[in-house]
Length: 352
Ligand code: ADP
Image 1: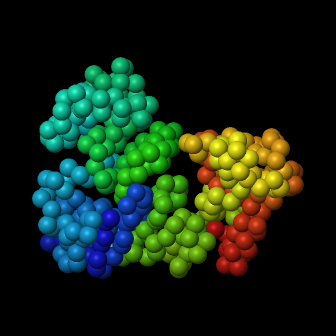
Image 2: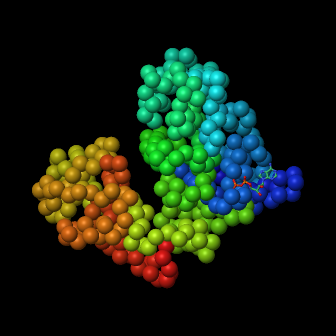
Image 3: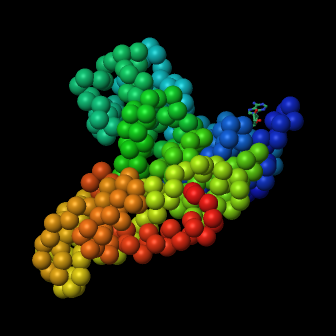
């Protein structure tokens, strides 16, 4: 979807902001660009919507060199969310959201519907909030409007530059959660800049860690945690807690082992022996069935530390337990996964 090939950016004053940057961002994925301040994250991102141009190298979107796109069309198809909540202060919430759809000359009726739909998606009741001005909203609410404004005209790509860093931890967590839900529902390609490793680990399908304008390592959160390529990656991942404190979803392979659908359960279409976990059409946790009989099992919440997961497995003599995130069944964690993980951290001789 977005393809950087040997991109360099040198600013007119000679600052080499981005060096030989090559990265593939796949459609529908959320990729975080992370690294210390000044490492070139924002510059990299701004090249995608041509707020800044590469000095050399090429950027493709859908296999087409971005220089070939009409710049307005390109930008209309790329949502952009910034750290400073850049809502237009004299426009109401609905007017703010409608800006790009109006530029695109969408039908009024359709825009009306879209505004309601988006507001509901992030938990802002249209009746209460549509006519408010930005100053009549909390920081978190403003940022939610900022996010849905970027989505309003249904862009294929969304760029987010430290969108939540000015928010308090609660608003921040809520928006991170919104983004994950949106991502699942609408499958946009999201490029997300942050300097916060916890945020990157929580959000990213893929993390691109940068230093001095270069890529240091690209990988899934698990890959960076388990196989950091060098000391810089280790340091950046940080003085994370002991491996036993690692949250279960960090080492969760999103495998569907032992997961069956409600339909399969109803039709008896699953093995008669063993433990199986049932999810509904929306991937919500329904319950468990053991040797063909429904059984009560409390699933693991995604944020639980490994030591608690292991305690629960040992208590119930389970070799694996389901993991849910906000009620959604996201995978199964086995005892073996935990052991493999602990061994790998042990081998490196340091605490993650
Ligand atoms: P990050 O987003 O990782 O903090 P930036 O991409 O903003 O990093 O900046 C990368 C480097 O480029 C920094 O050294 C910064 O000072 C420099 N830089 C950013 N914008 C400009 C500019 N317009 N002119 C000159 N140097 C710039």
